[in-house]
Image (cartoon, rainbow, N blue to C red):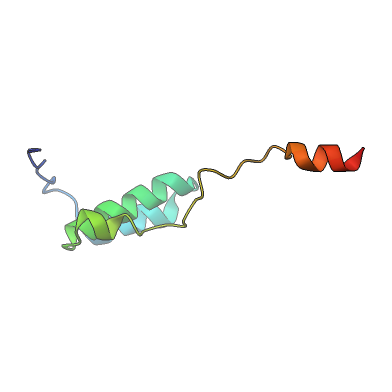
Length: 71
């Protein structure tokens, strides 16, 4: 079983949300919001819901089927 990691006592959830608002990096903002939710008492499962859902199977490359249909 995993050993829990203690949260730092010098941060508050409101400070982390402020940092998330100021950053221009989307993934960093989502991580900060997830940690802020944990400071507020959210579970790990609940923090997984923060941010947009990303389909990892989707690719930006054109499909082979479309390339063959264009010929």
